[in-house]
Length: 320
Figure (spheres, one colour):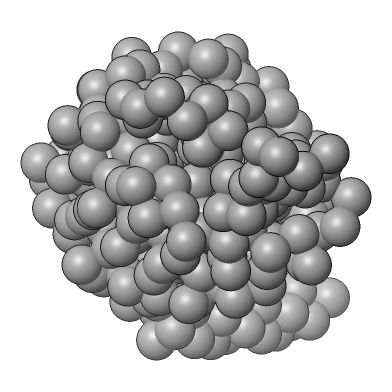
């Protein structure tokens, strides 16, 4: 019986060593956390928030006054960036199996089971950073933000130069409506890793929501320079420029967003409204008509298009 026990122990050790080696080859023990090179923001849904005003043109043609520009700022690129960190389980302790199970549960979307696994790992050995990261990831996905924030605060205290932990901490703070604290953490993540594009995107959203338009413009442009195929960033750059009264720059940004997403009626609507703000009413009819075709139920677009056409083709005073 003792020989069988010894043989089973050897086989289990070989299997565990093979698993560790495979994971190390996949993610690298000392490699920095990986991030996707491209972003799919459409899955988050376009932020269609309330309307912000455009200044009225200084003329006496009331029918030509354009006063509305749709703003869609407000949606965060809020994916927590911890998949690689979670994968680095603490293989040196007896918590290996629970850490691996927690990682598998996270990837499968079983967040409550993942939290239970990481909690069992914590009980079987002194909690390492990876166990804490796994617990924080599970808690954030369970929308238990105060507890997740507490764990990310502890992670940052223990490893202050980890940009990924600061990014995830900031995302949780933003979800808890602590936008100023979130902005501070995004700033610090960018000090550690200047090309952390997702941090740039989310910080730009916060700055624009807080009315820090010049900083928002700078951040959106910084993001667009590195990720030029993300339509929502160009759109938000356009709204920030427009709120600053930079209508020519806003037009360029909206047109780029529309080229990237030609079936987006809101970008076309804003192109038309911005052309009107620039005094180019005759050019505004085409994008407004395109927006109306793409979304025939939008009463705002239909009303603006009717008013514009009345202005461009006024009824003579001597006709009924």
